[in-house]
Length: 231
Ligand SMILES: C[S@@+](CC[C@H](N)C(=O)[O-])C[C@H]1O[C@@H](n2cnc3c(N)ncnc32)[C@H](O)[C@@H]1O
Image (tube, rainbow, N blue to C red):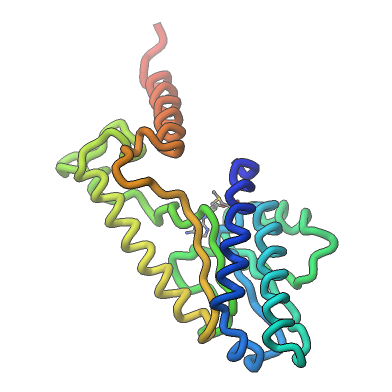
């Protein structure tokens, strides 16, 4: 799974580089302190997060040198965030030896505050924000018109089910954006990448939809195996 995600990590490198070169407000940041704080929200166990961290650091350094040539390059502090149950031991025992940043872990859900006000310069999240904070309640309610019996996703289901997922995503994103807005310094930057679905293409025809349909059928086989009494 992580290797599959390395390709997108490299593909977005150019976009991030462009965004930093054009939009990161160094005038404000140059005068705001000695260290530059980068956080990866939903970092998992590596190695993609290390590649992203290095790419961001190099782009920021280039911008710094061009816009603040007389200032000293700041120290970089990388914060790795994921759920408390994430395998942070693997992450921290495989850190690149030649890294040019200090590290800290920040366990907890990104659907809430994780950092003090105005303390981050760059917030990053890759392929993590599509994870919802919970299954929408109506999908589990037998009496609801959106009851999603025997299903784990929204491909090939009722529009109401799609709406329930969509509205949970909107609520989660609002909470995420609200928290990051408080945590970022003025002039800081937030970069998010996540899987999407092209307009007009049904979910079951997308790579993600197909993968989850197979996963669902495996789960159903397992459930049927334990719920069918042996002959
Ligand atoms: C598919 S992995 C992506 C890992 C990495 N960012 C990459 O690009 O390879 C998604 C990660 O998001 C984390 N995640 C999901 N929901 C989260 C939440 N509410 N708070 C923090 N991390 C979360 C998961 O634990 C998982 O490690």
